[in-house]
Length: 337
Ligand code: OGA
Ligand code: NI
Image 1 (cartoon, helix red, strand yellow):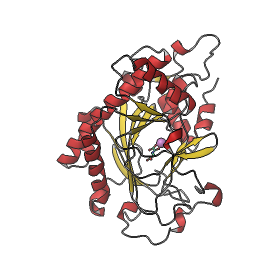
Image 2 (image 1 turned 30 degrees about the vertical axis):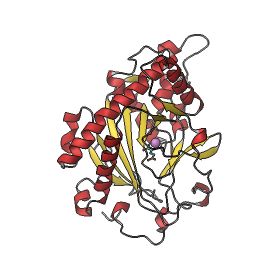
Image 3 (image 1 turned 135 degrees about the vertical axis):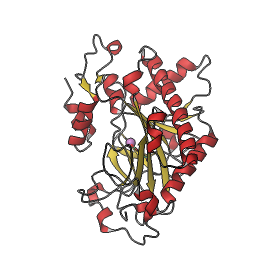
């Protein structure tokens, strides 16, 4: 259990097993700037501005593949309480956390460090992660940490963020000319909460909190807290995604890219560490069921738009993604027509 960084009390220098070779180090990066990151305000989505907001979202997905959202409907109080609950989880005694430690992708509540491949990887990422399923709540809540307060707060949070995710998907449908309700049932069957925790790092220039990746699922949202760390790749440059108070970051996943026939992007992103502050982020992922067929939506095809990908099941995609070392482009290549 000493592998979990959240169990380390003080670290004076970066252990060698966290030092990446020079070409994989974060190096210098632009100081976080929110000017380049699209910001969407959902305050007026039920008024005449709805169509305009839908267009802004689609444009952000087309040009950037990531955006931030304010006035999303999840209360500040619930966001703060949930963040507090997760910080408390990572601060809890090693013996308590040991109950949840698992590198098994299929375990319903898993706490691990770096990646699920910790045992075999040469260099580790500077993060601990807690992931569990949360929809439908009654099927999964018994696997969560057995603390009534945790279950109450995280349960409520799961429901509220799901509503927000469905609103975003509906706006994407509106903005793209897909029928409302296209994203339903098996396409959004699974909901995961994935919490990253990084303790202060003795030398952020040498290591990473999370590797550069695209999210393989349908769509993700992220509650960043107030510590910088998330970076997105835009035109070959890493840009810091500045944490804005009471906001969520929305990241379209690779399945949205395929369903939109390549029209919507899924940004490459990574996490750098901070030398002074610990950082906790709450990710929520919507994921298709294993056996559902994913393919470009018919409504988006027709001359001159030929389908770019052939259909596949999410299970096939995910194993191809893992088999290709989580490299999005290589995985997608296997499904291109
Ligand atoms: C993720 C992710 C970013 C962060 O969990 O897929 O990209 O800042 N997280 O924690
Ligand atoms: Ni991600």
